[in-house]
Image 1 (cartoon, rainbow, N blue to C red):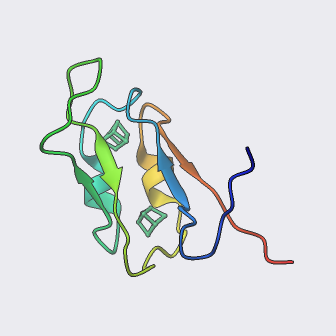
Image 2 (cartoon, helix red, strand yellow):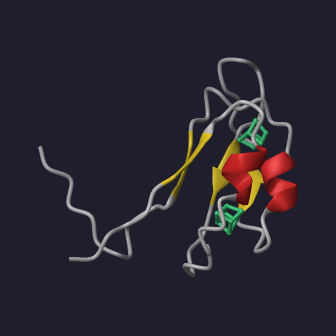
Length: 82
Ligand code: SF4
Ligand code: SF4
């Protein structure tokens, strides 16, 4: 099945929740407070993983969250308009 991606549904910051150790560094570094630790979810390692939440499209793709993550759990994906 082909996933249809619109600008609205496009998620530029993807966090691998199973790699996350809930250290909160990405939460602290984001200039727009777009990442938080999930209070409900617990991953296989026993941590509350980081989640990206940007309903207003404020992410500036600065990549700081990905660069600071010690476990390389964050990937930045850029949409290329044709
Ligand atoms: S790329 Fe920058 S603005 Fe976007 S979530 Fe990461 S730190 Fe925040
Ligand atoms: S910096 Fe990485 S390991 Fe730490 S909370 Fe964020 S995603 Fe998880």
